Image (cartoon, rainbow, N blue to C red; front, side, top):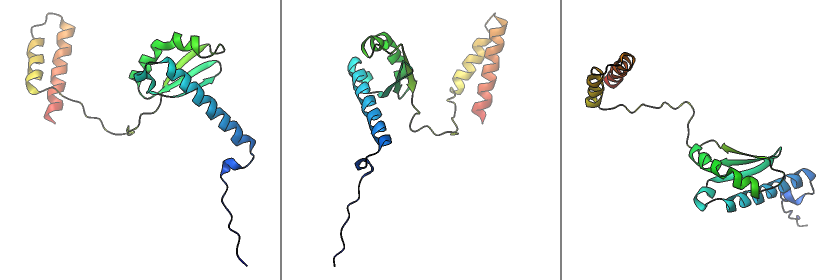
Length: 147
C-alpha cells in the first residue's frame, strides 16, 4: 500500500467569513490608495503608503512629516474627488524605519572660533536680556565643546 500524498491547503482555500471580510477590506483599501495616488503628483504619490476611510474621515498615511505637510495642501482636492461620504482628510505619519528608540543623539557644536565670535559680539549689544542670553549660550557652547 502506498501512502496518499496530501497537499497543504492555504488558509484562503477554506471557506471562512472572517478571512473573506479582511480580504474585502484589503481590496477596498488598495482601490482607495490607487484613487488617492492618481490625484496627487507622482513624487508625492510615491510617499503615500496606505489610505482608509473611518468615521467619514479619509486617513492618509505617509512616511515623513515633510511629505505629510505637502499632502495637506491637497486637502480640498482629496475631499472633492474621493467620496461624497468623506467629510474630512487626516494625514498621519507612519513610524519611521531606522529610528532606534533610546538612541543617543549628539549635538553638532560650532567651531571654537564661532563660539568666540558669539561671545565677543554679544558684548556690543545694548539689549541686556539679549546680551545675557548670548553670553549664556556662548558659555554653554564652550563647556560642551570642552567635553
